[in-house]
Image 1 (tube, rainbow, N blue to C red):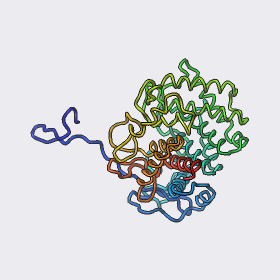
Image 2: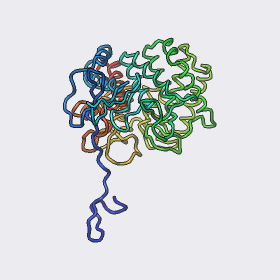
Image 3: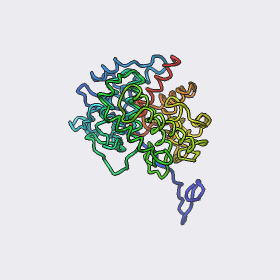
Image 4: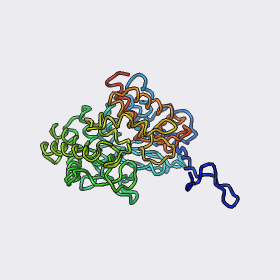
Amino acid sequence: MLLGIPVAAAVVGGVALLPWRPPRPALLSGGVWVRGDGVAVVLPPEQTGRQTSLAPEIRRNLNAATLPAGRWEELARTALIDLLSLTGPVLADPGAPDSGTATRFPSGGVVAGPVSIWRYVWPRDASFAAAAYAAVGLEAQALDVLAQLATLQRGDGGFEARYTATGVVPDDRPAQSDGAGWFLWAAGRLLADGADAGELGKRLGVALARACVFLLALTDTPSHLPAASPDYWEVEERTVTLGTAAPTLLGLEAAVALAAAGLNVGADAELLEVRVTTVRAAMERGFAPGWGRHVRGNDVDAAIALVAPPFTRALDGVAAVRDGAVARMSRPAGGVAPGESWRDDGISWTPETALLAWSAAGLGRDEEARTLLDWLEAHRTDAGALPEKVRADGLPAGPAPLAWTCALVLLTAVELHRDRHQ
């Protein structure tokens, strides 16, 4: 429809007006390749085939990683290569890769994507990258990522929405309160995957305590839910979303585990356990039974994955909503939108699709997990990179690779292999 006019056409003054259609996003990069000198070069969208030679450091990490064998081995391998390429990179200017002009990110800094407005560090994306590194046995890389995030943390324990290579905020978008939760959650994932508690305390102790105190303050309210804040949708919010509330709960739960392992997280373990119980109950009061994006809503959102395994014990009523979530969020090309209420532009988003794939694997919904991973694998760029988006016609779009998607694909593949050896 165009302002109430049927989509066939409108005629004004004898001139036929075609209906408005959302613009088709373009593929901005085919992938990224780290040269032997350590400089990461952005591959053009028309690039075909992956680069077979790997920079020495990437090859060492790849050889040290424990990747799932079998069906998903190649997908996991390329996702890990791309994630390593986006971690602490020296990114050449995509317009002049041989000019010597480059942006140097610090060790452990995870860049969301190699081009344009994605050349920033998001605390959420970096936290998932740390979890993925830990899942494949690259503990040192995981710790480096979280240690770098710790240098960006505000004094109150929270984080800004994103950071430049020099650690400053690039614009006036508001802070996102989910960052502290994701930071603690990732540290908890490292601990669960075998990281030494003493090393975690040595590298991250002060930052973990600040993040924990931040979450306690965030939930020390009559509702015991955090205030409204932008989340991974990157839009202004007036009502708290599941994408903000869930990481708060996950961070508090991780703080309990870290405290039980002997780390000083800035709060008594008993207090933390009580607060976790209180916040879980508050979320069930506020979001059940619809478990939509917003409190008292029923518009299912990819964040439904965050309130059930593998993230946490499923909250009351979540299972029934999660059963139909993929179908309700599906898009013409076969992936999903960020949520049911996302604009109807036909575009699939790979991080949300991968998030639901990991969710499915954690819930034992193996067929759904395999179907979503199959789709992600089939919709990579010609150079084999995972893009941010897939258009309705099935063509990849946006930056490629995307760090968050790479991390989630790795976590999903490991989850499937870990318990079912597929």
